[in-house]
Length: 114
Image (cartoon, rainbow, N blue to C red):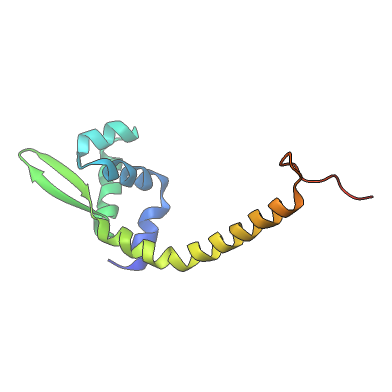
């Protein structure tokens, strides 16, 4: 799995919807098709991209193909995002403190000074 393949796979909203479905539990292709409202060929193409990126695994269950989320790439993505999350959290905390300092007891900011 390359980082570019992971980002590319997650860039598409249909594939993110499939990942969200699989986060709940493994699902057969037919169920994914129904839940996403896509055609079976389109869903299969999206699943292929997700599989090639390492985000999903597939297993045969009799006549059905069942897809499951592979958490390892998500864990790697989360680790990559951690420094940015800390940056945003500290910025948002500073904004919250500034807003607290400038608001009155009603929670509204003071009127502008003329």
